Image (cartoon, rainbow, N blue to C red; front, side):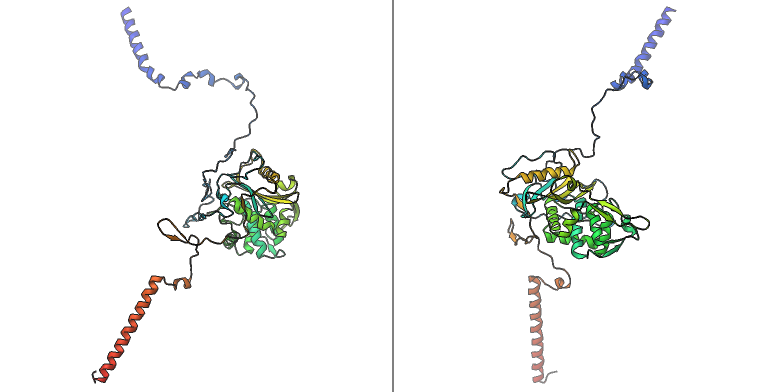
Length: 446
């Protein structure tokens, strides 16, 4: 019995040894977990340790942006959704051409901070990837970050929509609201079917409450959405805003959407020079018509700077998932008027209107004699003359291409020479044939 027991013990030991690798292969954390811990009731758990209050994480946590490597010289950052996907069968728009010489001066070509030689310390907490501060009257750019870097405008492009509408429509014209207006995506002022609104009221709803329904109603009056977008882009080019391509009248993201802090400064400055638009953007509260059974209601401005910053003149906010937060505004102090633009910012560490306020404070603190870092142009600059490139090639970067029947009828120099030679040969041949016929007639030959 003793020898049999010993044998059984040896076999049992071998069996245990054969099962050991499976236990070793388990992660150490799994082995260290006591099974009983899983079954413990909540009451048996140790009391939680108090943690300091931490704000919930966001998709894009704040960090001071570094744009010195020019990440957006040609195009905005990639879209985060499919809002900019072209329609089926349509190609994606190519990026707008980049000028060799930046509009507004040599320093406007900078991608990082563009600051005056002397001045106060730059305020902290600026989350915008591109911003600009300028004197409204003279157009002198006081400071900027990545002024021509390309980003999406979001609803700040409504300033361009409003400027176009003011130039083409009568403010007293009455417009009937439609279901298409009321069903627009995003922010709306409250237009509805059977409601009647003047163009002036639509502009208030567009700029004060960022109404996409008002943008659509105005676009219909301007010839439809595609025609309006085309006109907006033509107006942008006329103003010198050559980084700008609107995709929608409302600023909702669309294929090829683009602008820059410099361009928005041009557009906003042109708009505020119009007394009607300046008054609208400076309005805090209006009465707005109702529709059907809905009575009229009051509409307040969503521009927090207007309500909280002394001397604020007005402005426009914007946000989409692709554009992030955008802002343009102006303020007056001690006889000076400054404008500010911020693109691709976040509402932290302080809200966007507070970041705008800090930049305005910075601008007002600069002495009036401070040398500017650039200038806002009043119109599109003349295109540069043809210039010889390396290798002797001559380029005409922005020369317009002729189109239409007249363009087809214009031969090149080489073709013109060929046509003249061919006509001359035909004329000589006809003259020779005529001479030969006459000669035969004089000789009595058939």
